[in-house]
Amino acid sequence: MVWTECKDAGKIAFSQGNFLSALSSYLTALEELTSEERRDGSDKSNDKQILLSNVVACRLKIGGGDMATQAIEEAKQCIALNNQWPKAHIRLASAYIALGGRSNDACQSLQRVISLDRTNKVAREMLINEMRGRDSNERNNGSSSDGGSSSTH
Image (cartoon, rainbow, N blue to C red; front, top):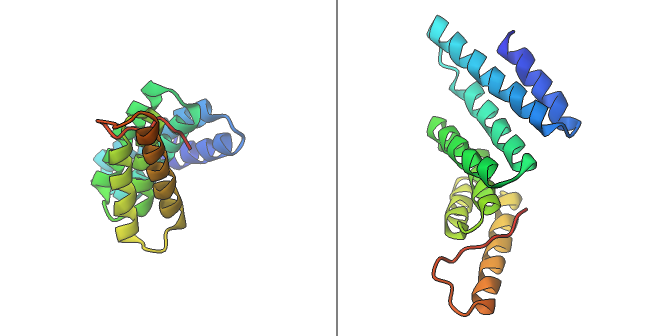
């Protein structure tokens, strides 16, 4: 199967709320794309980063600690392909937030987004929410040593 067909199947499944099927399709697309890249020696970094971003989005929709942990690693891979793409940093921040206890890491990722795109409203709102949640946790718990937040978005 051609990787673009797998990507299209993932897009359809995601739009229908079938996140496990979408994840499977995007992972297959990523495998096929990597094979194609090896065969013809082409650079498919842009396509890879989009697929990785979609994989992360699926994992976050499925939920759970294991999915969040995997999402963090895949978001980091996405950033390694292009650290100037704000969406990859938003995905990483979302994964940190979903995992919980990684508020500082989430805030750093969101600040990176804002440094890349000062008009990014999503990052600004997420950063404000995360900082409010962290402040609230510190007030409720006295002094928080890890600055963590277990809130999800």
